[in-house]
Image (cartoon, rainbow, N blue to C red; front, side, top):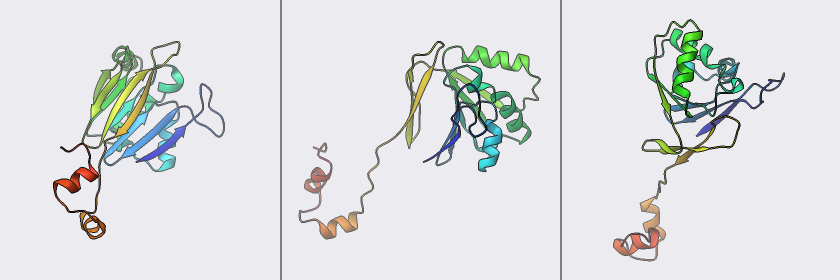
Length: 180
């Protein structure tokens, strides 16, 4: 997993810090958390490709967290984005995305799926789970977590060389006590 901080400033960017945006890369997933102004520029500077973004998680709809969306979506479209862009956000996200497309003239060639979430697990694959919890703010706001699934990688050849107990069911109980 790689976490790339694209912006850590709040409402007003500084010379050194862009508005809110974080890119989480995990295997073939590229998850953008918030998309403040200048996010696509920060992606280009970092070498991350716009067309690799698979999901966008919106914490809340204050401008400093979403004003980069129109430009990002247009650039993704112009770059030949071929997947369905999945956007997740708090209650009201579908309405706000519709309004965004009403305000800006888009050459919208990409498929976008907007999902409103409340709390708990909202996405799962073989490797991780995405979860959301409401946060206290003056508008509907979500905090997100990416939780890796437990995976044991055991070098059985090595373990058998150094283990002083017999293999089989007894051995598995020693490593995984939940096995009965």
